[in-house]
Image (cartoon, rainbow, N blue to C red; front, side, top):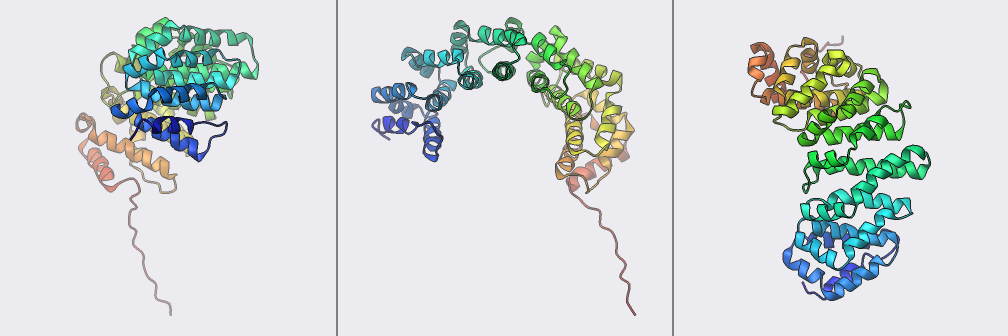
Length: 384
């Protein structure tokens, strides 16, 4: 590899339309960002000149460059400092205040990726980015235009994805930028098919999938209480969306413990007024693929909690359902059913929670796999 190649590869990102060439160039550049020596070649004086030329062009090629910059920054604070000194980071941050809604949305999409280290996060925060995005969410309440709604959706997703940004403390971040009350208000919107309502429910689940962020949600209360309220009164697709969020929260870890697991139990106890597993079993048994899969996903996450496994073992209807094979169910539902049983069998407390006969049946199911069909004898009748 030679430094002479760098400018030519960067220039392949040029153009308004996405082509095979631009896709391949971005893949190559992103891959080379993982190789220390290659970075020296990619960031030569000639390459930087090519980058700045691209950044003076249309938004499509600008964001192809920004995607590569984000990939370089993700694993290297020195790369961030290089791009900052060259003014490229500041050019990126200016995109957040663009009047073009699609440009701003692309910027929002990129921000969490940039925060894999505390160094770029602190710089982005000092520029007021998160404060401005939160204000965008709050001010949009009085603006029901399509543009405002699109920006609001993107802003909510930005905040939810920050839960897993490695460069931050989720509790500190959400304590400073209080998105939970905004999510709660949107979760409780009266229109069940509202994109904002559905997105807010999803965001609660995404944030709650991080144990530290879940503790923030529990301390703040409003978002989790809103989720409980909507679940307890919902039907159809809205209930499915709630179940997906609940599965995310319950599934924050494969070895849950401590405060976060207790928060999950308290949430579980409020769902369906303490009869969550009863209602969930009925939902699964209706046979509708989406609700069946969403319900089984929740049960699979429950298994990881000692209290959840106990609840499942104590409710014979769900145990009977899990052990009943039905080849007419969608394959994805059969896969989730198997995943639940496999998780039960692997759980350390399972042998003590289930009687010997039931546990032996669960083990046999796990050995046989998700699609095992019981052989049936056929009697041949000789025709006269």
